[in-house]
Image (cartoon, rainbow, N blue to C red; front, side):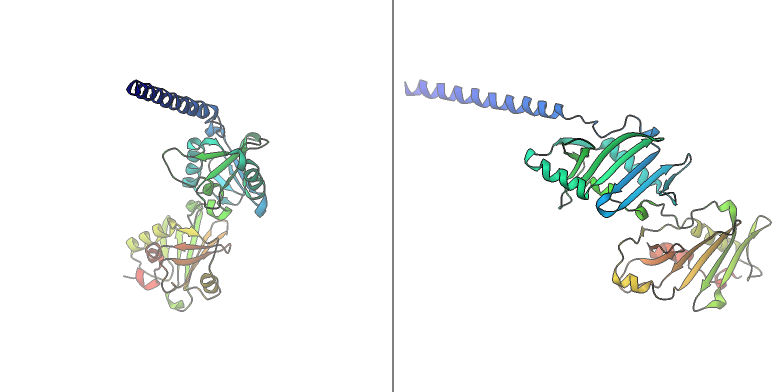
Length: 313
């Protein structure tokens, strides 16, 4: 009798276990099916012509608008095309994994309104997507919430462990193109290099008769001149300096080692000042003529640190 009873109990146990597995499986499928994976996506990304990232808590707003040929940040600077590509790829791949737990909905909703980023996307002047973005203090989870909705969602990019919200937190300076002398080089007029401690090494490159030449050098090495100009044309910052340290703030108050000033045919100037390297630092500090400073790799700076004597035969 005891043996039969044990068999019946074992069968019952298997039956209950199987039922639990089915409930978990189908229940999970139901929960997943209830979350619209396209909740925060736009129907056609190629039609988006304006992105506005507003952070009311910091009184900060970044507007990135497509002018028909390029993306412009706050009507002032050309945007970093790689970042624009990453932004749209993130919107395409980011998915709401599940609604935030009921016990956390109110606190996260408050955080979204007080500290979050308000994201609006436009086709022309028509609003096509409107939502809020924030993350937890550990920067390990990202939350999205549609404007006017009360439900917040945990958002992830399937297959990746990334803090999605970080992309939306970028400042104006971080969105701008990293190229330093980013203008139409067909309008080039002149380039002047000035060394603060060695003015005898200063030189000016001008363009006339479809040729570049150095005014202070009678016969210049054209290969070196061409390589120098190419390095200047392609110079990019590793990072714009938006959170400077005390050491770099002090360095910016000193005299730069040298400056490069370019003028176009409309007499607009584009200037970069280069400062001496700080001991123990792996980057070189530079300052643009709009007073924004930036970090450069020593390798890139070495290519543009050329004195007049370098070009002489």
